[in-house]
Image 1 (cartoon, rainbow, N blue to C red):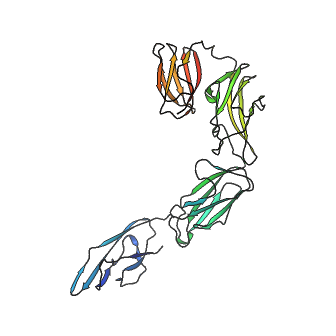
Image 2 (image 1 turned 90 degrees about the vertical axis):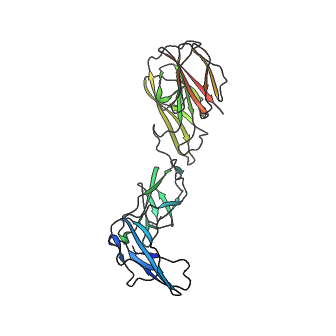
Length: 366
């Protein structure tokens, strides 16, 4: 691709100036401007090999009987065989990690601009199965319309290309959106479930005994609050459970049960936020009374005060199951834990004595 290089001399006044461009160019570059090349501008043609090339130029001047030659100035140019990566200048959906939900009759629009635009540079679009982009290819900075016939998580990818110059297409850029409903599974579920005060994937329940199920961090796959929902346990809705974040349920069979929170999204489609809960025939024995007492109020603020049993070991986990505090107790004395740097939210406290574990929930507010 030809390039134009221009030079100028400061305070030229009425001087006679002749520019001194190299006779030959390095790295296989050539001139398109014919000799003699004494003007302030030349057109050069890079070689086909990528790399960095430096081209010097000086000027010879003559004015009122005084003449001389300036020091050289240089232009350093880096060339490559690949078109520069473009960028999204506009999109009607979010471009972050959390995808946007669109319904059946909605159209997505987007605009991609080439970082280095030039003659023959176009934007080429691809997408998931069932995704159509029009026009394709598009010009740099031209808005396109994106439609889809399939539901679920869909991805659209754009690359800048310039076949006329024989360049390799740019690195791809992409974004995703969800049509109608998200393909949720156990790994992508953003809602958290505690079973008997413990994260769903961290414990189990005992068959034919009441268990508490609590859903929290009630945000859907798209980052919006879930305001209306219902529960299902193994395909059955527990009585009086609609829109309640905390319910009690008796699991009647051993093995693995599926617990789901079902919400209706703005497209009218049902989305399932599900967990697997292990159901066992036996479990830990009853926890003795007086295992631990909460001295400070619950919710607590910047300081958590606990009076555990003398020989208990304490662990506190956040809502993601990561440990926030672990340590032994000190002869049953009041334990002071600084929580001012903890994010506000729900925490799980485990107090262990031998083979017995007591589990508690603590709310931290600031």
